[in-house]
Image (cartoon, rainbow, N blue to C red; front, side, top):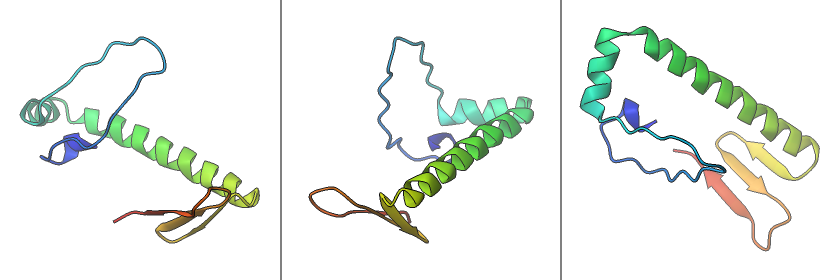
Length: 88
């Protein structure tokens, strides 16, 4: 996500198994997009699939009565405290 904004990255990623990782600077990414704009379509497709998968998981958790999701707020039940996830 940080590739679409010129901000510091805020995510931490931990691999489940050994893998190869590459880092690209924002300026280099912008150059790549100018050279091959189709890369954005591939990335958008990946983001859409992840959103669709996440939406399905949220729906399943709601049906199981484990969470309540309304708008931008998700309440997770069963924890010692309620966990509120609010997206801005």
